Amino acid sequence: MTRRATPGSAITRRGALLGAVGAVGAIPTSLLAGDVRSAAAAAASSLAVSDLDVARLQDAVDAASTDGVLLVTRPWVLTEPLRIDRSLTVRFAGGSLSTLRDIDLVFVTASGVTIIGAELRGSGSDHSGLGRGVRCSGSAARPLRDVHVLGADIREFAHDGVLLEHCVAFTVADSVIADIGYAGVLMFSCTDGMVRNNRIARITQPSPYPNSYGIEAVRATTTGLDGAPRSARIVISDNHVSDVPAWEGIDTHGGQSIEILRNRIENCRVGIALVPSKDESNAKATKYAPRDCSVIDNVVHRTTPGPGSGIVVRGAGETVGDGAERANGIILRNTVTGYGDGDRDGAVLLYLTRELVIADNHVPGGVRRGLSLYHSNDAIALVRNRIAGLRSQGTATSVAIDVRATENRGHMVGNRYEGSVGSGTVYGVVCRQTANDLVLVDNDWAATTTAVVAGAGAVVRVREG
Image (cartoon, rainbow, N blue to C red; front, side, top):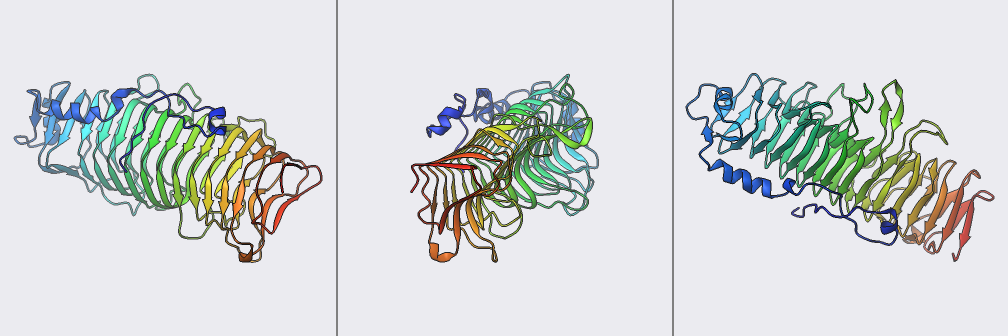
């Protein structure tokens, strides 16, 4: 994958409905490929030092000038973190770092740090532990700024490949991150950054981890927004995430203006999840919904059967009609294959949303259910989605758009099912419960065995054959 996200104007709900291609919000241009070129030029400057004549790599870091360059040319086996506490470029020129311990192999506590071409190896991903390849750690009061991990090869860590805490204007790009226990790239309360063009594979989720992620943008749940702000204005683009079999490929919990663009996600239990963050006063409840997020032009594919949806959007709250914060955003032009065989699951699963747009998505080769409206989707718009070739699951009837429960209100416009009725019974829309209010306009259910099955007054059909 060579395409990169390009900053531009924000995507609007109206633009999505009209099929417009929005861009990704205001991200500083300093985060683009120029960082690599400028860092390479800096490495040739008179400020560069190397690890050739030191007994400890930490001594070379401590001897480097602020805003200087450190060249790592040798293989190092470390028993404690390499600590970077000043603005510095660390460029790997044939060198590497490894450890047999569960530590933060590179621990950054300063702004203005760029790490280029790092080869990092940990203690393995077959056990739980706090092993991380790179950790960049600021705070809500003093976030780190201008930190970048570029062209790295990070493998075999028990917890994370790259952990970013309270970082602003950051980049993780052009890297391979593989065989990790918990998360390939994990961001806590980070803003205005990019995770782009990375290859993230094999997130193992060893016991007792309850979940795992290829890429995740979240906030801590032990305090409110003052101490743990939402992750916001992050572009996650052109990544290839594969083999997160127990949990999720790309995720945000309560993020805002997270742009998930042109990624390829393969063989994950859930491909992309926009879900809420917990209530800091009640760990059993959710409080902060994902807001103004966009999922555009992604390919989500799974070859093995099982529970899980390709794309999930869920707002805060726990019950039907809950008054907690609702999720909103745009799900546009994604291709989702191989999902829909678990209870409630679909290629796209939606609940507790408001003014959410689901447009121009292609859903071929799903199982039993294409799009799943679970409950509490208010002012939702399903526009020009194509569901194709649903496979049957036992004696259950396949459904292109399944309205599972109640409190769903909105429009379905120009959607269609493509497939052979000879493959089994397929319904276009099922909305059996009456406490829904949906208007169907110009949808094409000609390839289904039954177009619409609905309770009295739940559905109004306009210009449908």
